Length: 119
Image: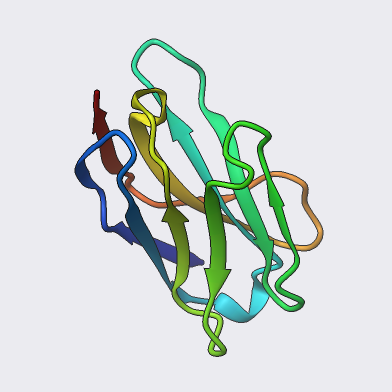
C-alpha cells in the first residue's frame, strides 16, 4: 500500500503562484509514476501533470504547459507541483496520485487540497 498526503493549497490572486506538495509513504519502491489531477465543481477530474518516479521524465496537460512544473527531489519524495501565472480557471481540488508500472490506472490517491484563484 502507498499513502499520499497533499499540502500547499490555498487562495491566490490571478497571476500568482502556489506550490503543492505530495508526500508518499508505505511501499514507495513500487511506484512507477506520480501524477497530479484536479477537479473543479461540476466538472470531471482531469489530468494535470505526471512524473516518472525513476527517470524524472515529465508530461503535462496542454492547459498548464509552460505555467506548471512537476518535480521531485533527489530522494524522490515529496513530489511538487509549482503553479505559476495562475488563472481563475485553475480553481479546483488538486489530487496527488500514484501508479505501479504494471497498470495504466492510478491506484493510490491523496485526499486533495483546494486551490482557489480569484480574479
